[in-house]
Every structure is written in structure tokens, then in C-alpha cells.
Length: 419
Image (cartoon, rainbow, N blue to C red):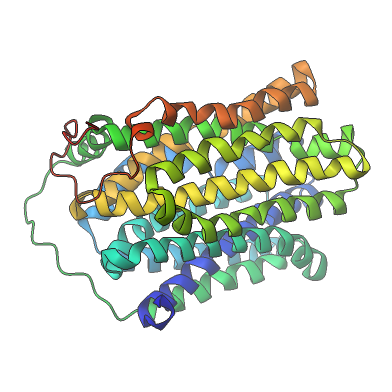
């Protein structure tokens, strides 16, 4: 059992606490902007977008940098920077210099730290665990990440209510201190890089993109992720407004419904590896990413009273499918990609996948404004299972399992196509 693996335990706790802190900040920062700085709706939206902006600005070069350096120090430095930045918010408020511009800068800088942490964490796990344990490790990490996000969103409001919007950031900052201590407790040290050549950064970035574009398996999964995020963020960006204004649900009940629905991610982390073992990784990917998310179409049918269960069931099944699918795909990429390119692969796929997140949010808001909230939900939730057609019309549908073993022909089309 991986729980007996000392270094993995520390890594698991550190990454989970980091996710918890990030989730708390997604609630706390907008509350500070609204309640303390009287920010406009546009400014609050800009604050949310600022956290994702670094993926578009530096996501690709970070992958190349991570492949050049040891990953553990990167995660330590990222946690330390987030600790200092979030702690600066109450200090700035005490000095009466806190502004919306300050919060925007914090959101961008902590977003940069998150890009480095997430990219390094993805590339570090295959070094920490043998290949036979990576599926279990990914399941535990994805499951705890989902639980941490649920708890973080719920606790964010409670922390702000108990300590105040600004002082609550001390609690948020402390989570990154815990993450820093956990990662520092890991004894495993990566072997020194033997490559002494200095390849131009642009060349290494292009190598990561060619790896994704030139391999049918990686290309298919990346395109699917980008298209899927359009639908996911499209409906998620307007669901709170829909529940409050169209259905008449109180804010407290909205939070409870979203928390229940989000718990599907924990179930997905539990089921992903087990279903993949029973029916094959390729078939399980189709089930979790196409068949199960079809229940997203229940969400626009949501109504008052018992009809609220339609939203809960639909969103819960989406959560199961997304996290289970991510668990399977993460394990596949880690075993399939050469070690020296794992950072660039993580950055390239994240750049392309996360780049559609702000577009999806803008799409959902625009459709809701022009066509109405329920119509917008029909369109955006339909996009969730429709994205699975990318997988259905790919070689994945003819396979029981995704390829095993490491990719040899980097940057070229993989020759191991279905027969």
C-alpha cells in the first residue's frame, strides 16, 4: 500500500493542502474585493481570470524549465512564494495600501507560482513512484484534490465569516506553509541531470508541442480536454446565477448543492482505476468521458423542490467522469512520455486545455445574457458529452487499453496504431 510509502505520504499531504489553500483563495479573494474594496462586477471577473492568465503567458516555457531543473525545489519555492503573497494582503490592509490592483497582482503572481507547482508536481510523481504504483498514486492524488477543493470552497466562506475577509488570508497563507513543510520532508532526491548541452528554450518548447501534435494518442486526449473545458466552464460560469435567479434557491442552499455535486470527483477517483482494470483503460475513458457525462443534460431541467435533484445528479456524474478520466489519462501520460519530456508534456497539455477555460466562461456569460440562462445551460451542458465525440472518432474506440510502454518516436506520429 502506498500509505506505507513515507515520501509519497508527505507528497500526498503537501499537494492536497496546496489544493485546499488554492480553493480557499478562489472564494476569499472575490469576497475581499466585494466587501472591503467595493469592486465592480467587471473587476471581480477580472480577478478570477487573472489566476488563469499565467497558463497562457508562461505555461509553455515553464514546462521546458521544469525539465531542466529538479522538481522538488520548484514546488518548495512555489509554496513559499504563495505563502508570502497571501500573507501580504492583511499586512497591506493594515497599512491602508490595499487596492484592487494589489489583489490583481497577487492573483497573477500566485497564478504563476501555481503553474510552476502544478507542472513540477505532474513531472515529479513518476520519479517518486515505480510505474506499478503510479495508477494508485494518481487515484489518491486526484481523489484528495477533489475533496480538498470541495472543503476549500466551503471553508473559504466560513474562514472569512469567522476571521474577517482580510484576516482570513492568514489562514490561507498557513496552508502553503504546511505544504512547504511536507514537501521539504521528502527524502527522495532526483538524480542530477546529465545533459550539459544548452538547447535554446524555444526549441525545447516546440519539442513539447510536437510531442503532443505528432502523437495520435496525446493529440486526441489534449484536443478532447480543450473542447470539454469549453462546455464545463460554460455551464459552471452561470450555474450559480441560474440557481439563484431562475430557481430561487438561497445562497446557502446553492453552496450545499455545489458541494454535494462536487463530491462526484471523490467517487470518480475511487472508481477510475478499478473500472479501467476491469474493462480496459481505453474503454473506461470512453465510459467516463462520454457515456457518464451525458447525464449533464439533466441540469437545464432543474426546477424548484424535488427538481433540484436533477442538477445534483447531473453535476455529480460530471464530477465522477472528469476525475476518473483524469486519473486514467494522468497515469497513461506518465508511463507513455519519456522522463526528459514530462515537464514539457504537462505544460503543453495544460496550456492547450486551460487556455479554453476563460473562453468557456466568457461563452457561458454571453449566451446567458443574450439567450437566457436556461437556454445557455442547454447549449453549454450539451457541449460536455459532445466533447467526448473527439474520443469516439479516434483510435481509442477500437482499443481495450491505451498504449502501454514508453513512447519512442518523440515528435512524430506513433506507429503503434490500432490494427
